[in-house]
Amino acid sequence: MSMKLKTTAFTLVAATGLTAVLAVAPVVGKALGVNAGLAFAQEQQQKKQQETRKTPALRNKVYEKLQAVQQAAEAQDMKLAKELLEEMRTAGGKNELNSYELANMWNMFAFVYYSEENYPKAIEAYRNLIAQPDIPLQLEINTKYSIAQLYFVTEDYRNAVKTLKEWFEVADNPNADAHMLMAQGYYQLKEWDNAIKEVEKGLAKNAEKGRLPKEPWLLLARVLYFEKGDIPAMVDVLETLVKLYPKGEYWIQLSMMYGEQKKDLLQMVTMETAYVQGMLTRESELLQMAGLYAGNDVPYKAAKVLQKGVKDGIVKETSKNMEYLGNFLASAQEIKKSVEPLKKAADLSKNGEAASRLANVYISLDRFKEAEEAAKLALKKGDLRSEENTLLVLGQAQFYQEDYQDAKKTFSRALKFKKTEKFARQWIKYLNSELKRIESLSQE
Image 1 (tube, rainbow, N blue to C red):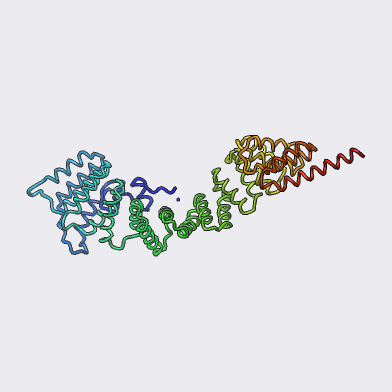
Image 2: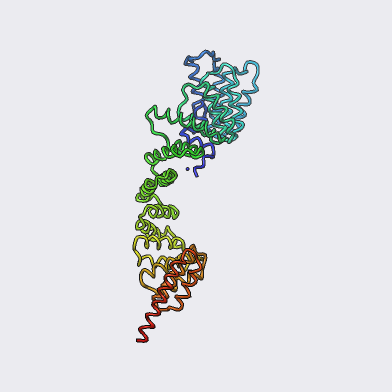
């Protein structure tokens, strides 16, 4: 997925496709739209709001003071900006501010605190803003959204969700971004069902407008379905991801999900699609690709993947990797080519498994002396899955070198294992008959 969604606020906001924190509210500041706050204030004086609230007027002298604060903020003189705002806040008599003027003042306070990364104070300022009576409804709505976003900044997901719920109650037709932000909050709270509902609402609203889903939205959906163990839904999301945002990790994950569904051929083909596009760049990924080829009876392709991986310096020549390569080549009937990697594996391995496999290969190539040496090395290193089979191979190698006495001893050892008892007895019988034949020829 991996996919870690707990992050800083800006990453969270970017991941949901939203504008920068606070930009949705009438905040001042160059990066966020420097004249937004005062322009909003002027607009309120010029336009009639389609709402039942009767908003007080913003007086010119107050507007001028706010403009002075803005200029100080633009000059990065936050100390002066706060001093000017404090003078406005403590003013009395004729200079006392009405509710709408106070709202604009707190809005400026919020921006200053936000610029100083004092997010708790910025939230407090915004709370004071919406506490003012008779402010424009849209200002209140936008500010609540900004408060929710700031809670994400401080990783206070419980309050972020709570505030977003309040915003949803008054917002007019919330867009897909808002639903995805709410889904983020629920995800952080591990409320998977609620998070999934919001994701699906957001994706549906986005689709209604004929828009393609954003990549981070699909990633959030993917991790939520993973948490719920909903494999079919995960497959749907991953299929969309590889179509719209084709990346190696998505092809690999989709392949794994097909594997979970026991769709073995589809699992291999999906992984192969990533491989031929050069998207598999890690050793583990190439080993996985080779394993899928081998599991679907295509050992030659499995060997080719590992050979290229070794050549490219991605796959290391470890005992296990060389054993895999040797086995794949042998299974693909490339017997001679399997010798070299199996020899490397036998030398490097701490157990005798690779050496045992090498002994089998030597036997098939009629290289009996080397088969004997490999089998003895395997038995010496031990930790074999099938010691009895290695004994049979060793006995055969000795027999074909006409070392009959040692062969008989080796086959006698194999008699002790139930799995090879029958075969060992047959070899001893054949060996005895061969000895009699040789003796008879000698007498003649």
